[in-house]
Image (cartoon, rainbow, N blue to C red; front, side, top):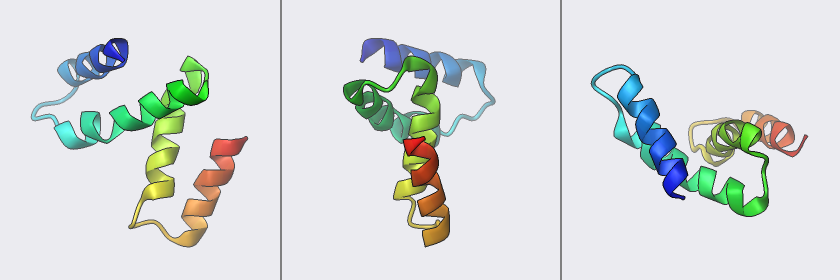
Amino acid sequence: MCSLVDRLLDELAAGPRPADLVTRLSLRLPSLVIARMLGVPEADELDFAELSQEVLSQDASPKEIYAAFVRMTE
């Protein structure tokens, strides 16, 4: 997990200022940890995290949520 945090912090440091800590770190870290636990290949972890946020979004329509879920399971 330390390598995940290090990677996210490196991305934060290299990104624009001010950084949105919630969006860029706090929301992504749990999804990335779950991806590792599920055996998602490292190359697909960021996609998995982004799609997880879409599936769990309260702002997305049912159609958008379903589409993200389908992409996640491909």
